[in-house]
Length: 131
Image (tube, helix red, strand yellow):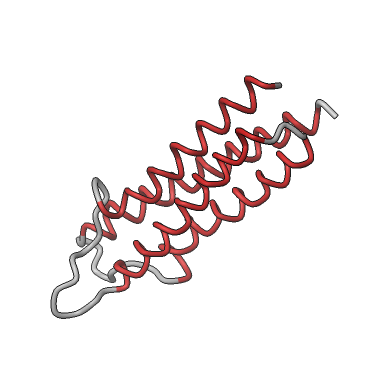
């Protein structure tokens, strides 16, 4: 159980960091020049969501209680859904299909959100079965 908790805690810290940094590094959104685009606001929200996932992953290191772990996973799952919905439905990215934010940033964030959600569900099921 202890190894399982630490492995998933590390996974969530890494995924949270990648979610937070992706729109500013390898999956960069449009720069703010004359007009601030929607992808700029998407990147700012993703930064917050990524930091939140990483912080919840850090909290997982310190608390071994299964119910507490399930609660943290619930929070991570909702943040992961936010990571998916922000660039696709809630805020969006630039309208042109050829823009880097639409061609790269959006799919990267969606995949990272799905991976985070799947990891939270997998650990939750694992914890649930052990009860």
